[in-house]
Length: 146
Ligand code: FES
Image 1 (cartoon, rainbow, N blue to C red):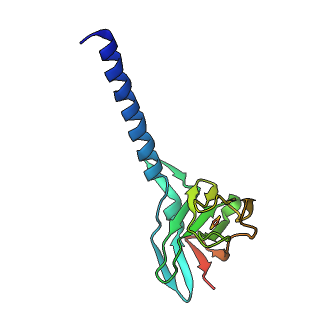
Image 2 (image 1 turned 120 degrees about the horizontal axis):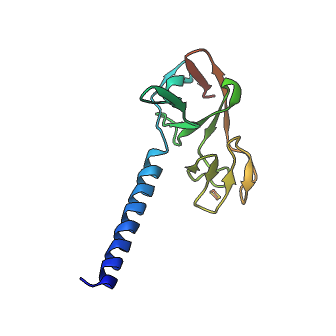
Image 3 (image 1 turned 135 degrees about the horizontal axis):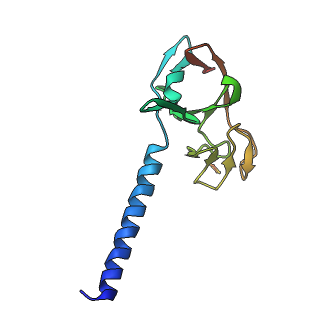
């Protein structure tokens, strides 16, 4: 094997490793929370936001929940001061399901973008996302579905 061939193989190997690690990160970034419905409330344990590694605990910025009977997932963002925002991942333009990119929600149909509070950042959508009323206690988050 000559030097040029060796460098070519190493380059492709590095690209493969980088691509795989990027794919694994993106796959692991959305946590689908376990939830229950009672009295028209979606109930999610606050522990769904916790990531415990060894002896340290850190917190996810958001979790996503799929709910029977609702055609779109709901994203729940953890805000400061133990408050939460729950948004339906349905584009307000023509109803496509949104993709979560951290604090940015994007629509692949026509390019609309929304912030983590549901506000339109980029059109063609003109209306905010559907937001749900959220209550909490020490253990759980209660999302009022209607
Ligand atoms: S349906 Fe989302 S931008 Fe058109």
